[in-house]
Image (cartoon, rainbow, N blue to C red; front, top):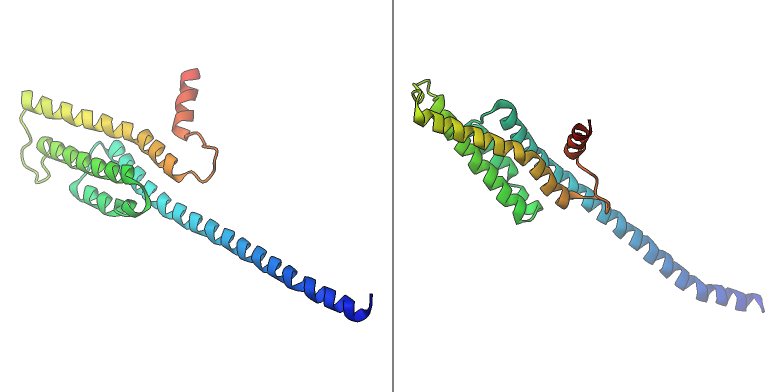
Length: 174
């Protein structure tokens, strides 16, 4: 084989090698952009998750919610409509409505304008009972909300157990 034939052979092989390398680089860039997109989406979803958990934790901790805090929650949670399926949007609306219900009950017992609350009697007992049922409902919503978000935010195929569940299992064993 002469030098000229050798150069022609290498020239013929060089084009497919360059094409293959270009395709490989393009594929790698596509993979990186997909990972970046997933990371960005995860971070936005995580912010919405924190909005939900913060609202729930505050209600459970304080035993009440004010009207402005409920409005702030629904405004902050509005991004969920674009990041999650309908289940999360419905949950935000449900938490908002229950928050307003709790606010209304609390306002009957302890008016925010400083006025006289319901007098001791059957009506006050009913309102206090309704308020305690809603607070129990809010308490149960923390693990339910974690479960709902975990389904939609998993970044790995293998699902990790919730720290809430781990804590309750360890209490049962002891």
